[in-house]
Length: 411
Length: 152
Ligand SMILES: Cc1ncc(COP(=O)(O)O)c(C=O)c1O
Image 1: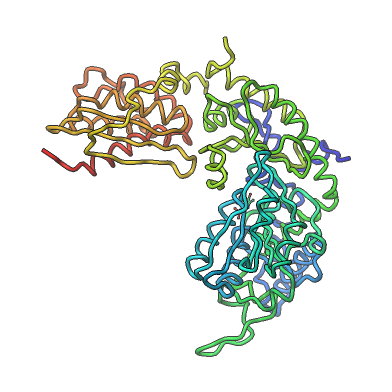
Image 2: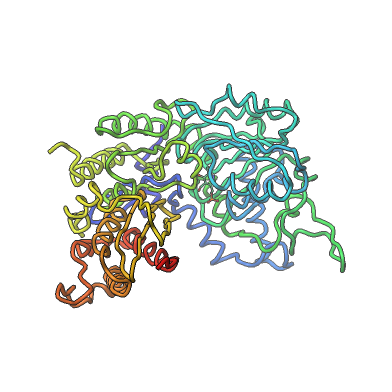
């Protein structure tokens, strides 16, 4: 069990009033709020131990470097990685996926090869592949969904053959909440000699992830969706694969030697961290990981699941409302997209904001998915450790206001 | 900041029963506009004859503000000269800008610049993220006029 009231006390922003009302922040899938522990860790570095990392032989630089590498270790332990070197700090999940696409994809894929992904991906796991496909002549193929908003595994199985060299799939859809069976996909991918990249942008913040049992070969995610700051993300990869992978960016820190016409790369992870890294942000992420570990990721998952179950139940009371996503909480995270016929998602979001309820409206950076659902926009409520049932109640009440304004309550 | 300022009845009426919602058989100025951020889409088709918009089609989908703005715009533009439409466009966008609040009343007697129902969209100004929704049909209209190929 989680002590949500103690947790809420760590997030000063939750005390804000929006348009004179208690704020129900229901957009953590886009970016989560930050606890004071994370803010303090970053301020502490800036105030007391700030200097560039890996460069100076003086005290401040050593302290900053130690704190940075300590953050890497925390993330490695959080994911149960085989070693700290498997953790590459990037700018974001997007940058992590691009690093993999450019570093691995660009140098490996050939005409006739296939990149297999799913229609429920975020643009961050589609657009890099468009670019890589164009450069390499490989072909991008899609796994489809069932009517119940799950990955159609029957159809998916038929897509796996030796042409598939990489499978790039989300661990949890930011629109549907669906969590595809990563272990099964890993078996299928490895069975045809392909590598598996999991987009963990939603999975890692919301569920326990042990990379030694997950089945993936690479995993990308962002700090800002898991209580950490913006500007920091992670690409985890199996060490052997990382060692054979080419860097995607060149610059300082990532070299062993530079001559006039060529250079030698540093060892992993530094080979992939060109330039001054966002080390204060990495330290903030380390503090976020501490915070989440103290709660326990099993508890985070269970809390999200309880709220999701409650929200699905309460949203069913809203006449006409349809949820895009699994109707139960099995293998499903706390992102609930919905459509209210007769009121556009933007109007829903504007009206909800007036009631103090923050939800996301739009295509959620998943245009192929929305198009396949016959929508151009939807509204989405999403939960995290600091949300409570009262937030769900505020959402449902505000939806009543929206229906009244648009004259939908039959009055 | 009352929601009633934003969702005036006349706006909801245009949203529910959009005017000029038609594809033209014979259009000579066409443009598509969208807000990549939110997915609102609008298509403007014009028939321009003798320097005048003699027919307009406004289609697309999106939120109440973008769709109502397009519907009202069609009514305001139909039968007007390109010159007048330019003035109207300037006036509408002015109303939507920060300075719009300082507009000394939207004078109904001002020749060629009567916004009519469109004035009901003034409330949008208080919701900055929605201003681009209101402006979308107008920006698309400007684009269509730019693309006009004279068949006269
Ligand atoms: C499933 C998924 N993948 C990738 C991303 C991209 O994350 P970021 O914008 O932090 O790089 C997001 C979030 O926007 C997401 O939800």
